Every structure is written in structure tokens, then in C-alpha cells.
Image 1 (cartoon, rainbow, N blue to C red):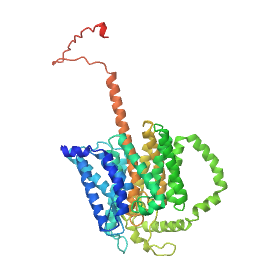
Image 2: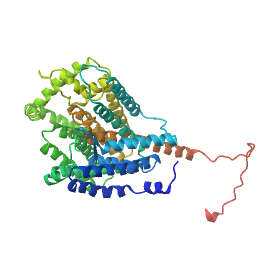
Image 3: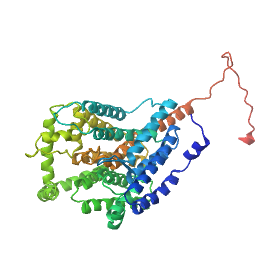
Image 4: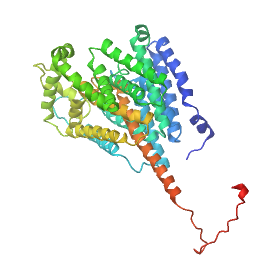
Length: 502
């Protein structure tokens, strides 16, 4: 184990010390520093400083909470990126996830502290990551007489798969207690609320456009901000009434923004509404059933106008997507098991016509993307992972304590269902290199982090219950009669206690 006064001092610095100067610094950089070499230099310096701190704290096993808070913070607000010479940029969350993972692996190797057991979602996720690597290898085969995707694009696509899984594992195993999970959740809610306000106010949005680029405010940002805010407001009765009211106001604000400003963008309001419905149904199941029975006839009566409202702007998109999926299914007959590897299928699409046109296209659907890139094996493993983590969350409701932990579990269930629905509307869960692109990782990493928090909460709850059982068992055992060196009984002479002292 490394021991150093400097390292101990850095590791004991409160997390707020790092975040307080980062907020005004990020705003100042976005407003005052124009895009160009100076901004790139500042970004590189920031990345170098953060990388040094992360590696230092990770290898010595300290400061994990600070590093995870930095990861959450940079996913939402800090505009740090590195140009790759292509249309995509390496974002700060990708770099931090990679650094944290390397530091975690180094710590396990140096200290020989490898987790002895893992729940089913972790094993399934590891199998999924292995299948992605195997698909990358298979993708180097020339399936069609045209060029594959450039190697940087393939590596970027593979990195999106692997780093998404690594983000899940980091939250699952590096969170030391429930207090740190609560802190990270509130960091996201507070910074997310600030970003939502910036996005709505035109003057702020134009001056801080560097911070609110599409990768930051993807579907997963709105979905999980709504799910966590609404879940804590509705279920966590340990919060004060003022805090719960503020969270409900934030939820209403997010819905108004989604339904008014982003009405044409279905990925921005359908998943948050689904998350709210699932959370409300779990909290008030009987009321939810009554509401469903009342709403169903109304929907059936007005189904024509509702369908026209929903499809008035999406009809062409739906038709072209369906035609694209049919073409991809035809393409997959060549390599159905492992697909064509990350990013490659995009370069083969012009060989298969879409509505009579020979053009390059992507599926705009996470499940079709998974099928085309990782084949049937990868898609089935991903669905198995979603089922496993959902099943774990469902069972956790019976054993986690009330307050923040229970509200977090219910919020995560709503967020998981909404995330799976969002995957049908676009590549929001694992971005596709040629659509949402690598920049989308800033938003897509959020469900992986918070679902990893479920595994951490399950682990911490089991450890707490095990300690309570051990203490209870020790309390039921009577006093042991001491023995001498040869195993002979030893009589104890207990002095009589004066009655005045009893």
C-alpha cells in the first residue's frame, strides 16, 4: 500500500473544493474563450490535471468519491473535449471513464483486491463486452467487395461499447457507501437543473452553447433527470417538504420544456413520460390502475386525433426507418451471429436499396444497431443484461431501507424502462459513430452510471444486513467459559458487587 503525506492530503480534500471553482471556470471558458487553439490548449491542460488527480487517487485507492463526482460533473456541464481530426471528438467522460478503469485495475493488481463474487448482471455485462470485442475481430473480414469503416471509426465504436460497460462497473464497485451514491445523485440533479434552465432561456443558451451541445442534452439526460427528480419527490419522505416541492416543480418544468419546446422530438418527451408513469404506478398501484381504466376509453375515442398528432411530423421518419431496417435484415443474412463489427455496417448500406435509393444510412434504433454490429449474440446478451438488472431492482424493493435508497431503486426501475423504450427511438443508449456519434457518450453514460448504482446499493445493503446478522448472532451467544493452556477449565472468581453500586 502506498503511503505519502501528499497523497493523503489530496485524498482528504472535500469534493466541494473541486466543484466550487469548476462551475464558474466552465462558464467563464464558455463565454470568454473563443473556439480555437487557446480553447484547445485549456482543454488539454484541464484533461492533464484531471487525469493526474484521477490516476493518483485511484492507484492509491483514495479519493474515489471525488473522481466519480468529477465524472458526473463533466458528463453534464464541463465542456472538455479533444479533437480527433474527424467529425467526432473525445469527450471528458470517455477519458475519465478510461482513466478510472485503468486506475481501478491497477489498484486490484497492486493490492490483489479482486472482487470475489459478482451478481448476474455483472457477469452478463462482461459477456456482452467480450462479444463486442469478438465482433470487432470478425468485422475485419471483407464481407462485401467494398471498403470497411476506417479503423478509427471502428475503434471509436468499440470504445463506446466497452466504456459504457466500464462506467457501469465503476459505479457498481467503487461507491463505498450510500452517502456517496446520494451525493452523486444530487450533483446530477442540481447540475442538470442548471443545464435545463440554460437550454430554455434563449440568451443563456446562445452565450453558453458550448456547454449545451447536443451530446450533453440527449434523450438520456432528460429521461434520468426527470426519473430521479420525480422519484425522490414522490417517494423519499425523509426529504423536507420544501425540497420535495422543489423537485416536483423541476419535474413539471422538464415536462413543459419537453412537450412545448421539443414537441416534435419524441425522444425528448416520450421516455420521461414513461419513467414518470412507471414510478407513479409503483408508488400508487391501485390509483394507477384506476387511472388506466379511466384513460383507456378516452384514448380509444380520440385515437385518430392522437395518432395524427404523434405522426404528423414523424410519418416520413417512420417509413424510412422501417425500410432501412428491412435492408439491414437483408444484409445480416451474410453474418447473423456476430454482425459486422462496430461502425462497419454503415459502409455496406449503399449496397442495399432503401425505397429504391442506393444511399448510406443508419438505423436510428439501438437494437437494430446492436444486431448489425454485434449480431444475434450481442443483441441477446444486451437484452439479458437489461432483464437481469431489472429483475435485481425489482427484488431490491423488498430489502432496501426507506428514504433515499428505496426512492432510488424505484426511480431506477422507471429510468430503465424509459431507457429501453428510448433505444427504439434512436441510438441513445449506446451511440452509433455515424449518427449520435462519440459526443453522445456525455448523455448515454448516465443510464449506465445510475444502473451501476443499483448494483452498488444492492452490495451495500447486503453487507449491512450481514453485519447486523453477525452482531445479532454474537449477542445471542452466552459468555464463553475460558480454558487453560491444556484445555482445562478455569474457574473465575467474581467479586461481589456492593449493593450501593448496582
